[in-house]
Image (cartoon, rainbow over all chains, first blue to last red; front, side, top):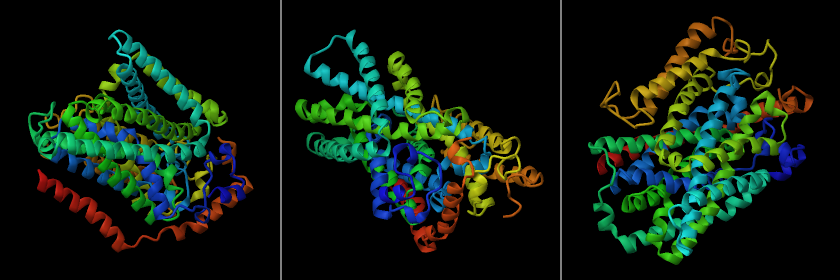
Length: 476
Length: 52
């Protein structure tokens, strides 16, 4: 892969960060390679955290199925929406110029950066929390010192992320090679500990600490949150998907790595969260693993957290290149700008922010489910998967994707309608299902939102965009 | 606009290659797609229903 890229003059880190298409012949990630890549991307500290969130309100049997169902279904739907990235080797935000316009693409980019950095901040606080737990276990701390130390470790986490992410894909590759086996080690150790120290009987008989009154609602909220997580993959699918050499590798790779394996790993975090009634992995690692093993696992987890934040900062910085005022900035400057908001949160309100982790998951679906619906309508149904790649790079006012001053307002309007539609079904902050939902029996917000935005975008495009001869639909 | 994204000859060449190769990337057949959809959207939810 690197040799081929070098042949094309895409050798250095800066050059690999361009948004030019990569032809299939230069992509060497077959199904096995791509499944490994996706697994490396998916197996990160967020497995334990997401599963842990579900463990606080779901019993073990519901937790196990919710983890697999939600993430697998969501991943396949999200993959379906941006399969053009694999077909043409395009970066996702280049492909999104077709539905959103050459300037309008800044809208999904902005949401991606916000959610990506928001999620990254959670991981950084988990890193800091783990470090505080390690220090506290070795030298017991008083309650007043812990919040200060949490902020100090959080800031150091941001600093390390900034430094490591400057190495680009090579650094990510080395880090994931180290942290993926370490995380697998943690999972296996914790899995073993759960079965030997806790036992199957206790696992399946433990009632969750914070369940909703109606078990069915808890179950569907669990599935919905994992759907939300899968929607959270969406902004990053294209950046990885363009490396797959065909759509078989793309679909099955994501399904195996980001779906099944992620789900299995989340189950470990979930069951531990259920037993210890906390979604924060550092809180249950020492009680479950014992002093020495718990500390070792916490150390590994801290390293894995750094890897997760680096993996997430990369696409955020990449996406921010879509803003003209940032496109000429150096890679280092882009990373620095991405690290500023994370640094601010981890040093000011880490505790408050960390408590809202389930809402961040729900917000992933609130923001990205409408985007998925629009992409399915535009790229799959209306354009029938055929893309005029040259026009994606044409910023002139006569370009196909110039729409109205570079923005497809139909896509923006549909997205905003989709956000409101999602919140009509499920409030992402309070996670109230049923009371506000227009169809209380249909306990899912992501799928109805995707269907709604897909239909709305198709209708509005046929009524407005195509008659106005915008978007290059007429030739299709 | 990004410098790399002006329609320079190098970018045009890469676009042509990308469009030329796009046919090679669609290798997943109907049967394979049905298997993926069946497992994900029928078997998994069914398991979820049975464990409820």
